[in-house]
Amino acid sequence: MKIASKALAVAAFAALAACNSNPAAENVENAAENAAESIENQADALEESADNAVGATADALENQADTLHNQADAVEDAGEAKADAIEANSH
Image 1 (cartoon, helix red, strand yellow):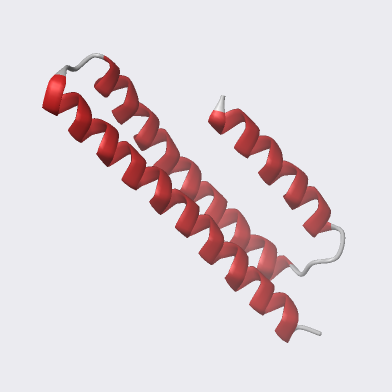
Image 2 (cartoon, rainbow, N blue to C red):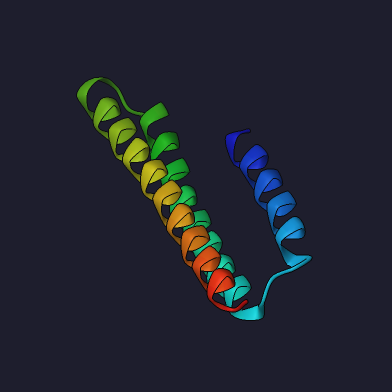
């Protein structure tokens, strides 16, 4: 559910950004989104493993998944910032 809503938001943002952006900025942003999606998939796999684990193992897996979700957000934010910088320098 979380991934679907995030993917929808990213798609909407990408469609809006594509209206007036340069290809280099789009490439940077797409690469960041792809990397973030890969990290999110890893986090989801850890969460599934945590669902099947118990006690401290489950807690550790959930913590690792949370860390990966945060990392994915950071990668996406960094990609957007870099794309914004490219856009700003291209005008």
